[in-house]
Amino acid sequence: MRNVLGGRIRLMVSGGAPLSIEVKNYLTVIFSAPILEAYGMTEAAGVLTCTSYWDRQGGHVGGTLSCNKMQLRDVPELGLSTDDQIPAGEVFIKGNSVFKGYFKNP
Image 1 (cartoon, rainbow, N blue to C red):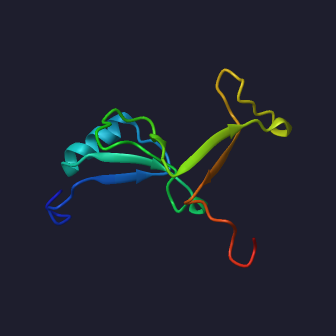
Image 2 (cartoon, rainbow, N blue to C red):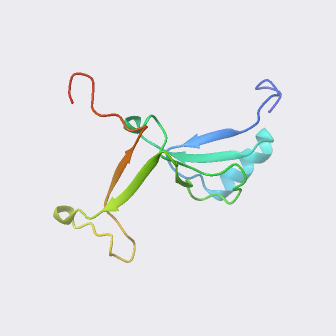
């Protein structure tokens, strides 16, 4: 499969959500390259978190990139609390990669 894609694959990135460990391991073997897992959004120039090159565990999207700060905050009107057994809330981000507003809509 690596040769079908040109033979020069050094790594691959999966974005949006963590892959299951089985899928990540399967893809690592198929492409003969490490699979990085990332999470992001358009407002943050695409990426907020990413696993490290040497992290082969899977099941998570890594830590916050050094150019960003990220915080989970309570949303009482939706019943979401960071103090719950499984913390829930709204993700707040700040950093150089986060844009200031939408085009013609600050």
